[in-house]
Length: 188
Image (cartoon, rainbow, N blue to C red):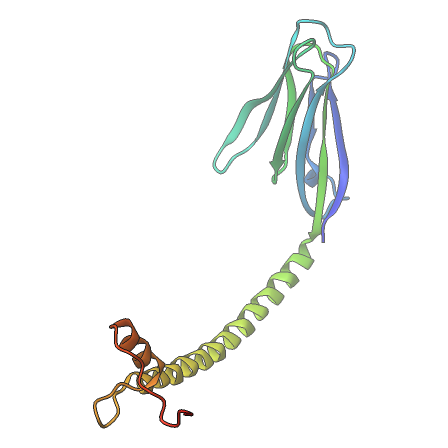
């Protein structure tokens, strides 16, 4: 079960850095995720000044610092980012310009850690049950295939006189240019 909350931060000349680290606070004993949707340049930004927002976060093996938005009054006042940060801490820094730059997104609170463990156990049990159901389904499917194969074999066999049986034989005679055999009890 996930709860979503609005997240917003403003970077400016007087406040150049903002760190998102809910795990450092005891009030968030749940899993956390940060989604940054947009970076907006404030209306009082200086004209022709580049404002560069950099993010610092952990990658698979190491810390990464990379610019995520370059905004300029008169040209680019906002940037759609849609960046997801599954691990804290995440630090946003205004490395160039005086801003203000507003970062807008969502803070997602997942289930409590104990709930995750219970859910994992339930999922494992459900998978085990499904595997049992699948084997029964496969047995039923194999039986159906076997009986269908027997029916097909009977249709393709020839009768004692060497004449083919079934609809396929009549169609093959017509396809060869032969006239269909006359009906035995035809009305005169």
